[in-house]
Length: 74
Image 1 (cartoon, helix red, strand yellow):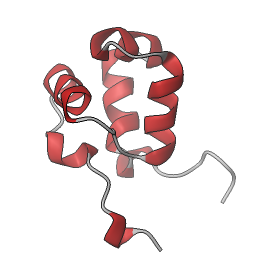
Image 2 (image 1 turned 45 degrees about the vertical axis):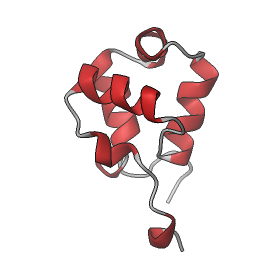
Image 3 (image 1 turned 180 degrees about the vertical axis):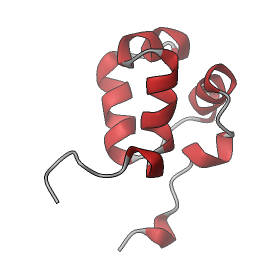
Image 4 (image 1 turned 120 degrees about the vertical axis):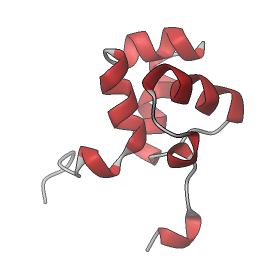
């Protein structure tokens, strides 16, 4: 699989950012930098609860989907 071709459907952060209109708009809503948004997308999780809550409320995606599950990583 080519780099960056992971299914977006499996990445709730990427889906939320897309719904919000891209990284710049998502960054404005969450009060963080574009670089932070890209880190979240790459990690597939949001580090702080307040940011996950803002992303969830703005995108309509349940907050539980933004929490990384370390047990599922292989």
